[in-house]
Every structure is written in structure tokens, then in C-alpha cells.
Image 1 (cartoon, rainbow, N blue to C red):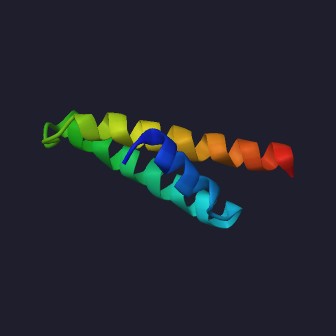
Image 2 (cartoon, rainbow, N blue to C red):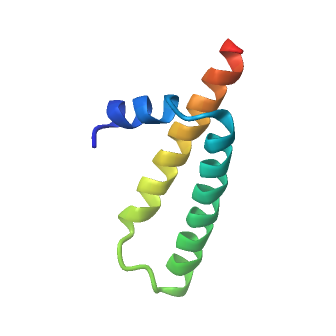
Length: 68
């Protein structure tokens, strides 16, 4: 799925859904970093994906807050 398609899907969600997704991604990122530090992380690219997805969610939340 392309980034623009992901953004469109995120923009269709409610603010509550986005807040929930933000928490899930933050928890996932924490777990991935913990795995990395213990040497158990199999795919380091998952950290990058989680960070980018979190950034997309935060961007959409800011857009929604700005427009009201």
C-alpha cells in the first residue's frame, strides 16, 4: 500500500481511532526497541516502518486538530 493510500485511510478514521492507533504504535515501537537491545529482533526494518506509521498518525491528528 502506498503512503498516499495509507494517508487517505487514516484521514477517514475518527480522532478516537487515531489516538488508539497512536498508542498501539508507540507500544509496538517500544517492544521493537527492547527486542533490538536484547538481540532478538529479526527484522530491523520493522522499527523504521513503525516510526513512519506513527508519524503519519500524528500528522493526521494535527491536521484534524487544526481544521477543527
